[in-house]
Image (cartoon, rainbow, N blue to C red):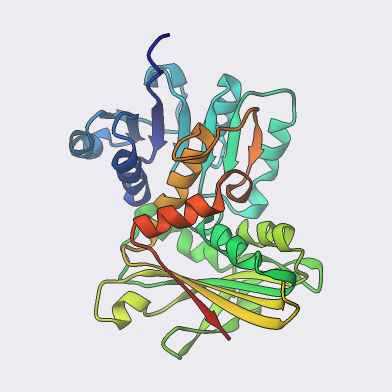
Length: 335
C-alpha cells in the first residue's frame, strides 16, 4: 500500500486579511497540507509562506490567462477574493477539482449553477458565500432544531469599524446596503435596503439601524426551516468586545420565533461573537467547508461531484466544536 497523497490547496487572495486567516487556520489543524498563496503581489505573501511552512506564494491575476497547471497538482481551490468572471470555478469544474467560494451574493450565482448542470462533473463546488462563509447559517440551523414550527428568523451582523478589513471588503461595503433579498409572508422580495431598515437591539440593551442584504443565509435558512419570514441585516456599531474594553469583535445575532418541540411558544436569541474579528470568523467558515469537502476533521468527503452548501456538507456538531476550539463565544437567550 502506497503512502497517502499529500493534499495541496490553492488559496486565491491567500495573503489578504481573510485569505491569510484561512491559511493560518488550515495550517493550525493540518501541518502536512501544502498551501499555495496566490495574488497579484506574491512578494507580499513570501514571509507568510515561510512562517506557515510547507507553503509558497505565487502570482495570480484573474484578468490574465489562467493556467492551473502552473500551480502544481491542486486538490482544492479557495477563492478568498472577487472572481466576477468565475475563472476559478470554471477551472475547477474543467479539471474535476473541489472549489470553495466565499464572496458572492445571491443574485450572482445563476451562471455557476447552470454551468455545473451541463454534464457530469467530478467537481465538488461549495457555495460558502453566506455571511462569514456559512457560520451564521450553521449556528442558526442548530438553534432551529429546537423548534417544531418557525414563524420568524431575523439574523444580523454587527460590524465594528475598529475591526480591520482588507481592500476587498472595503470596496464592497457600499454595495452591501443596496438591493436586498428577504422572505416576507412566504413571498420572495428583492427590495431597496435603505427603505427597509429595522431596529436591532444589541446585547448591551441599545438599538441600532440594520439594513437587509442579499446573502445566501436567507434562502438557506428558509429552506432549512420553512419559515415564512427570513431576513439578514448588516449594522455598524460598537461590538461586544469593545463594550468590554477589549478589541473589536465580530458579532452575529440570530432571533428565531415559533413553537418549540415541546409545543410551547418561544423566541430564542443566539449571539455568536468572535473576539478576533470578522476575518478570523470568515476563515473559520472556510476551514469547515475545507474539512467537509476533503473529508477531514471527522467529516466524510462527498462521494460524488455536485453543488454543496455549508449546511448540506458541514456537520453541525463538528462546526460548533471547532468554533469553541478557536475561541468563538455562542450564547443563547430566551426573549
